[in-house]
Amino acid sequence: MSEMNRRQLLGAAGVIAGAGLVPAVAAGAATQAAGDAPTLPRSSETNRFDFSNKEPQVVRDGGTVTECTGDNFPVLVGNNAASFLLVLKPGAVREPHWHPNAWEVDVPLSGRGRLGIANPDSTFSVQDILPGQIGFIPQGYAHYIENVGSEDMRWVVVFNNTYPDDIGLSTTFGGMPTHTFTDTFSLPEGALADANKPDDTLFIVEPS
Image 1: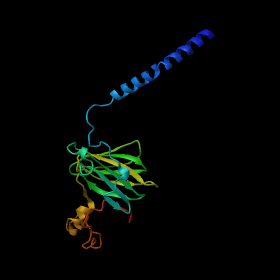
Image 2: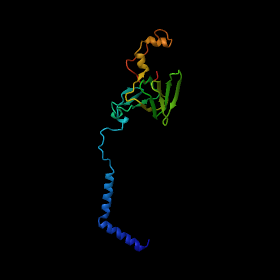
Image 3: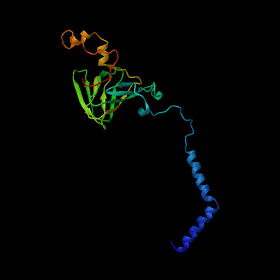
Image 4: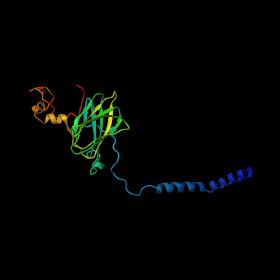
């Protein structure tokens, strides 16, 4: 570009700026951006749930369970979905349990967890599940989760029911005569007399 052309270009820019055309263009751009906004009213219902600022509903020495259901996340109501945040300390176990009304998807966030499942065909499966992988438990299948690592295990657990039921082994033991268990496991009479028979679900237990 010649020196004359540079001077002409700078002079033209000065004329445009002096005439107020540049601010007009900028204002037009701002108006266009504002017109890009939605015109519908904003919903009062949020689609985001923050586990980090919610108090867990289950607190045990071995870990916690924080529940996200229709009770504290209204958008889930009528959508057959819920999610729990499970935190297990090293060595702790999410007690054997099953969900009569929901299947379960386990999504590891951190740590090393082990998922064991008892199947209706009298077989079992067990596998370690790491971040980047998922676990799946069919509806009603008995299963347990164990932290087999050296750091806290954090899993997001997803259900296809807004209010998933939970029946734990501790619930079953607490709700039935003790002799039904000694008979089932061929134990001597009174062998479970000193066993802890809780009046509520334990959820999370530590190694004995």
